[in-house]
Amino acid sequence: MRPDILTTQNSGRDSLDTSYRLPFEKGSLDKLPASPGVYVVRDAADRIIYVGKAKNLRKRVESYFRKNLSPKTGAMVANARFFSFITAGTEDQALVLESNFIKNYRPHYNIQLVDGKSYPLIELTADPFPILRKTRRVTTGKSRFFGPYPKSGLLNLGLDSLRHAFPVRTCHRTIDPARPTKPCLDFDLGLCLGPCGNRCSQSEYAHVVANLAEFLNGRMRPMLRQLENDMNQASRSQQYERAVRYRDSYLALKSLFERYAVFAPHVRDVDVFAVRRRGQLVAVVRQALREGRLIASTEFVYELRENESVDAVMLADLIVDFYRRFHVQPPQRIAVDVTNGESNIVRDRLRTDLGASVTLASPRTSETARLLAFAAQNAEEKLSSMSRASSTAEQLAVLKAVLDLEHLPVRIEGYDVSNISGKDATVSMVVFVAGKPAKSQYRLFNIRTLDDPNDPAMLAEALARRFARWGDLTFGDPANLVLVDGGLTQLNAVCSARDAAGVDVPVIGIAKKEELLYREHVAEPVRLAHDSAALLLLMAVRDEAHRFGKREFHRLHERSLKHR
Image (cartoon, rainbow, N blue to C red):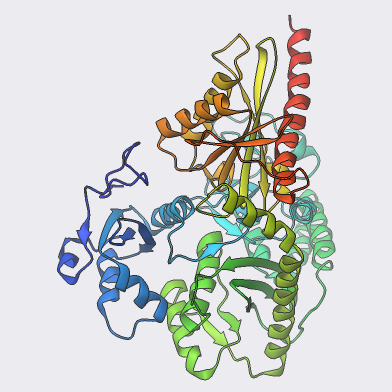
């Protein structure tokens, strides 16, 4: 990958150096390569207003100089003055770059998710003996992804049944047929074919993996018939161990298959998309039907800019964004509620980005209309639930105003120090998203360089490590606000670490007793009423960081005492 945007750690307002840039005009097209990459558009004030990815950079940027642009695209082009680009080896790499840039810089004309919520997926790796695992992170490469699924707990139950039906490994052993090892307990339990111990051939393992992929793509009935045929054939050939394995797979798969209720028996494989708007919020619901059964339903909420409308171009953007975000294969038919005039626009965009075989299901048929109505009802319910959470939105709006923040603090990271006279010191990190704790994203930093009690230095060390991985998706989305337990001394120490890392995020300190809020470069603290809901939210973040830190500190401290 050759970067054509020069990046530095300390390059001003954003971490993309502005020394290499081209005027946003037709004459600059000759300098663009016909290869995959990401382009970054800036306005007259040198702010990043749009980030896009392209299979062919030259063709993609050239499209902005044509006529008949959508209102949103036309507004972006009218405000564009410069652009830069990064070439990527593959379109997958360009996709990851685009996603990271959008999350870091939140450009004005890019679609923005409100909750930043991640969803679990099933991944089959590209190893010679592929690994089956659950993930929330879509990576580049040849891995295959299936989903997304609405709840991790339900996915875990499904994986247990899948492993009985398709005994694919979940370990990360290096498998060398020339050096077999003893299979683990999963082999004895029938959850793995044991390729590490040469208990199966690569072709036999690949056959099971192919069947698993077919099932995850919704081909349930053919898999049941095939397993039943394989079982009977193995039995007739007196390969009884193999017949028993096929029988166990058949029973496990049949049990999993029966969990999905028949939702639309006469409908072929289709993904149904419904979009509903309320104010500046847009709810998108995608429901995947395979062989008439509803196998997945996922919801997203986006925030529109002022004067932005949900037209056919926006609708196509939302659908394409879904498949890009989760790297899943679309079915041949996609149902969306559009008029005759809009359908051509949506269809052409989907075929360009998702493949020429994609077609739109007609919303005029009674069955498709029923599916669209059901998905639309789910979208309305999602918006209603967001409205019921308006008190949280009000709290965040108050914090944005009183702390003079650029963005709503939807994602807040809170930090606290725990130690006994400097020994076994840890810094806890908790995450609140839309006013609620996201416990799966909590982290603990062990202090490595200090043995004496020094809260500001310990916070600075831990936050320096956090800021060094600010764009790392394993931590979730970057925070809109960092909260530290302490006053100006702790605040200044953390701000120094942030500035050294070149990260752009507001930091505030909350001091106990009077619950004063300290901002950088402002000597006078912010005083909110003690019954203020906004203050109570920040106190909840601080108290949760303290609780989590104390619990983990005592656990680690007890362990260290046992080994002394």
